[in-house]
Image (cartoon, rainbow, N blue to C red; front, side, top):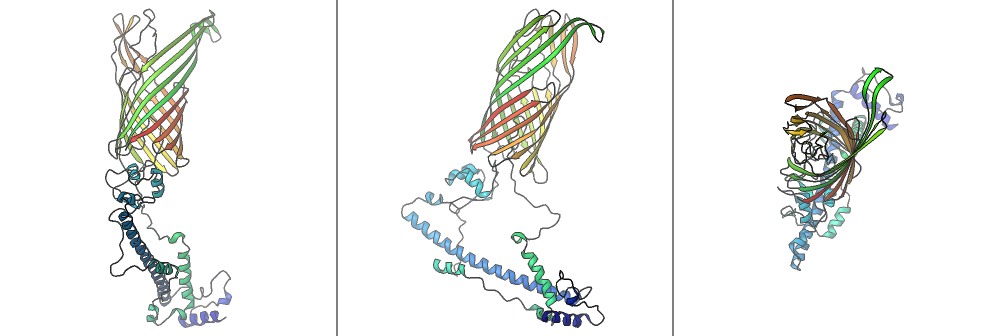
Length: 543
């Protein structure tokens, strides 16, 4: 009742007789007392309100500063004790390296990697990454401060106690830490205007309510500037992307070897009619059914090396073993044919360069790729053939022509997912084999160029495992073959083709130096292989 009387009398004194007054007893229970006494606050009311806010914030700031000061005193005293114990430990015969191995903070210098830092402090890469919330491939920047679990502070970074104020003994420090901070009196600036908070409990209540709302914010977070994108650290996401698509680059100075195995299955069933068709249902001639089953195993050895923090070189040497089984049945003649062909040897060697254009802050990571494939394998024009029919007697292990493919890769991290896309143009250079095939000589062979695009997403399952899936499509332009038959040149053209596949993959980090990648592709178009499965290991040799 007393508080209501104060609100009522204060409202009359400030607002005047002409202002509409609403008593506290007339307000709804959800409204705090004294908030509807006038339609709008006067200048004096706002002034009292703002001064109350400043007084409360100043009190809170003084209490925080006192707590910080007391904690700094404790830390300084503890550090002085640590320095004394370290000197005594060294004097007792321990080496400085042993003391340093007890750990602290490391400032990243040029050439440092997480592996070299871990080895220096006798720690593990996993422990360093967990202590500093780093994710593979663990990017570092010069000047970055890393916490080393159980390690001594880096030289020159040990805080010293103030010379004018010697640190108190540990017993006193412990007692000080238990003592609650003494409240500081709020500044009495509001009295200068002739109105104190006690005379205006309604305005003071508004200030207290605003202060309570601010204290309820999580972690005491400060307001952020609207419309300004916060700066983030350059943390490159690891993506176990498919082997033939560019990804996040290898760190500078790191060298990986990548042994791999790929298994491909392609099957095809076709029906051919040779003869004359009189009506849709009347055929005079022979009908032939053909069934082909093609299998290939590719063993490869690749490497990756980070030339700089943004430039990477890689290579791949494949060894291919192929086997084709083709069966045919001439239905009208009731005859069957069977052909089995094999081929094995060195495949086409590949080399690639990858350059990262940006830091991935305001735009997805963008990587420029350039890949070249040399005709080091046995091409289709170098195979032994039947002298009469010109049919090959073995299978090719190479394409027989050079291929150059520039491409762009875009990677957009969105934790826990990583979206990626790749687009490129495959330029197949014309070959001049001059190969004899029966009575025909192949003068020129111009394989159609191709446009390639892929799109997918990778998901992080945990710190060691990730999965990804997407779609890859390649559009091949027309292929031209210039043949010489008895001195007459003919240009044979093959139509365009689309090779599309659904791709899936998984990656698992066995340890800090070994990661396994399993990829699978399933044909979505007639021209694509039915299934392609590959297992590739990434083994770190040094960094």
